[in-house]
Image 1 (tube, rainbow, N blue to C red):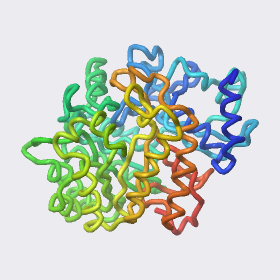
Image 2: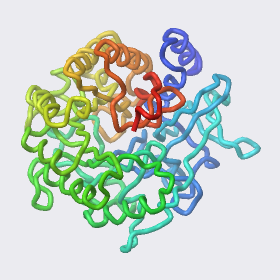
Image 3: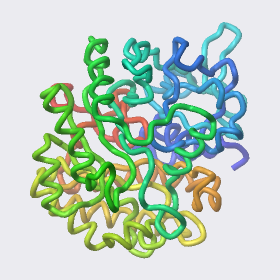
Length: 440
């Protein structure tokens, strides 16, 4: 293929059942996008909601390598519409890559557009600064630091533990930069609270609830690094669970409560449920046994792949299968030097995992792998996985859901091209639309 445009158009022609919007979205997520200075935000003092770095960097360079984009943050997300491909409204999480063939820039009239190979391919919308971001906590911290929102305001992302106790080369997941992201923000002098105080979280949510008059925020996610010992004297279930308990007591029924944590024993999972959590995300990361052992050495050492999967199935007895939604990192299956060397092999392996969980009524979801350069897999695979893998995964994902009669999982907003707000992969964009009354 002589150009990126030619590759994208070839894939759209070969896989006509995958929405064209998803093809562009996956390419932007896997390879990043460059920003002209005209498209950067004025941080928290401007009119555009800036990128919050809510857990990982999701960038193709370290902060010192991003140039002006490290000083004037790009928007949290962008919306693509129109252009020569007549794109329906598509929300895309921003992953900065100064070397990307995609670039966001303003034209002579000041209107933002997405450019590929020098050609304008879509109009670009940016999220307006929400009113709740304009208010600070009593201690001076910003709402964006304590309780940022993503997915176009749908989800409050509460990373209450900003580091991971899987530490070092023998324990850290090989694609994950949570610990480096913590270090780089601290080195840059940015506020980046390591362990968020429960009272700060409640105060930030109070501000969001007060000023989010349209009730755009519908769910919250409690998450952070794995806890192998304790944090503030609490084990993992009690640490993350006590935030949920406090939130549900203060704001009963206001948001869908979700927790991303390790696959924990059933008694611990029951504690999440008792604390008021509605959806549990015990992420299985990658399906293949050999790759799980290589890429998730801490999880293999402390829990083990088979036990991890057994605990996921057990958790469905606590939450109900529909409310157990484990994530995997789509693309690491093809990471050199250990991954599959062909798209066929990678799709077959990942589909095997999808069929295993979906046969039990559990619907996984996925995040499109961003090869962050400070991670071992990112260093070895700066281009990530081939775009064809990501497009075929969307096709296989929907087909597997259809085989087992499953619909889009709860807590992700509306499915369907032109409707979806989930921003870090296209799985929701690729599913059939449902009536709004059926989705929350």
